[in-house]
Image 1 (cartoon, rainbow, N blue to C red):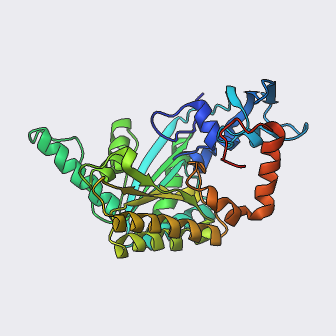
Image 2 (image 1 turned 180 degrees about the horizontal axis):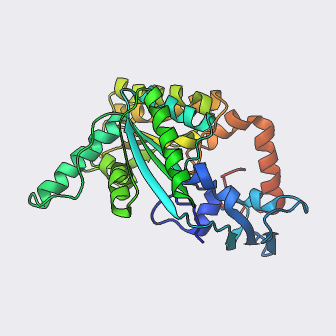
Image 3 (image 1 turned 30 degrees about the horizontal axis):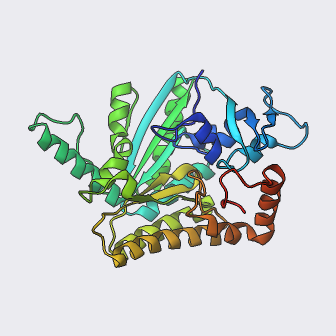
Length: 348
């Protein structure tokens, strides 16, 4: 058995609950919201509270687990978490497929989801992401004295990275072939797949290496100086919005590879910045982010799919939920934390 939510390195279980994290496997296994069974919480007044149970379902009272998941430290301290475990699949196939344009790649994702092809993971990378990977790979090869990095350069085209898993090899292969056919109908080319562990990692290498490769596009940038956007939209709007975001990056002349967990409409733009950047450049970076969030909300999506609101997206909550929705959140906050000692200023 295995815990299948994988948002990234250096995360903690409590933090994942607090921000409602997800990651690449959410298309099959769900986010933290679907994978937390129970919580033990200490409320602001010191009260110890148990939320949920180990049962797979319950209709007893309010769903307090969901209230706490995504609360970002505003309602209590998470002390104990019981999560769902899932069987480890016997057969796993990794695949990648290139497309002529980002819109076609995104439309292929929508077709895969709407036709019900079982996907374990479904990621999308734009051209800038593949350029970043190839550049990073070349730099690492030079640093190693030409001894090689164990990876090969990729075509600089928007690319889907797919994974299929199950307990029957024939069925898993059939799922992959169905996906291959759908990708081909959207003009996908160079469909590659692998089943052996090392070869699977090679197929997905560009996706796994993307974050630091993207930051490396601007020497001197660090993870702390990089803005990573996060929005999630209905699948029917996914192709248009991710394509519009990539156009913004080009037209505003900023560095910002776009990628995402395409299978559930969640995507990001990595925008590295430097201490020496002009105020105009920083303004353009934030314009990319602002446009993305506004498009997502207008489409019926959300300003954050998995990273959380933080302080940077507080202003978007009234736009997304209206004043009535924010008032409900404020009422919950005031009832559990009347002295406003937990993350003050976040909700009220």
